[in-house]
Image 1 (cartoon, rainbow, N blue to C red):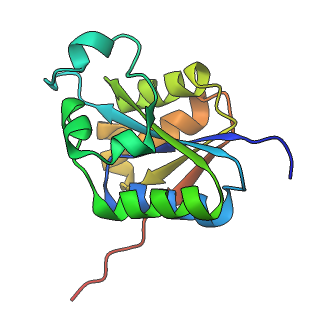
Image 2 (cartoon, helix red, strand yellow):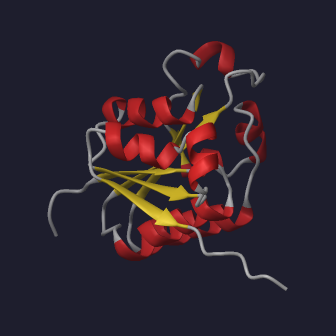
Image 3 (cartoon, rainbow, N blue to C red):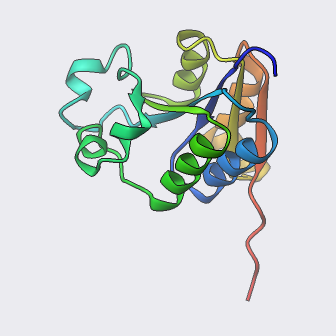
Amino acid sequence: MGKARSVGIGMDYSATSKSALRWAVDNLIEEGDRIILIHVEPPKATNTRKQLFEDTGSPLIPLEEFVETNVSKQYGLTSDPEVLDILDTVSRTKRAKVVAKVYWGDPREKLCDAVQDLKLDSLVVGSRGLGLIKRVLLGSVSNYVVTNASCPVTVVKGTPSSKP
């Protein structure tokens, strides 16, 4: 086993970000690594912690605190049992240290900021699979991060939705 790494995972609780988390746990995370779940809330979000940490992002929130509903709500986040179960399992089975950090602003810029601030060795994000027109109009978070982040970035594609 080598040096423990810091792996960031972009999380917005969408199906694709959950796929990115599952992929990272199954394929990237090794014993003793540190997983940092990175949440980026909209700049107009209003909650008690934003006023304190808007410029720097929240302090690192250990998994033990993050599972508490009142802590998540203070940062404007929703508690997701599936995500918490995955994180709890990897912390026990691979002895990974799991923490979360919340930023406020444009996800493209804040994910790149997180790479620098947290000295990430790797970043994993999901891709919504936008078509060319939507990607041009709305901008692709994953494309921006791949181009601008200073660490390796893995983009996990979402599974195509099945049509009835």
